[in-house]
Length: 136
Image (cartoon, helix red, strand yellow):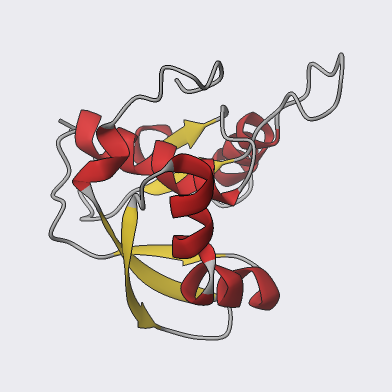
């Protein structure tokens, strides 16, 4: 269970680091530093997910972290990204997840703006795929 933070939300930042062969740089780690140093977000309010390779695994892995930290599955989460990426998440990502992951780890909620949309975690995200070597 997440404790020690007096707001009712947390920042998740999900971005894979190993898409650059040999790189020791991880966008999720760097964004966490930025949130702490520049925006004064408390460290205990930031959860990073550095293992995802693309949007399908970003959402799946974040849902697993939501479960791991005891956050409720019946509360809306919000994705924030570019307009095109956000539209893809709400319009076509579920079908892509089903094709690539054999499950849909979320349910779409309301579109909040051009760059933000709600989603609800789905229990299917907890299934581990034994044939996928990078499934954490």
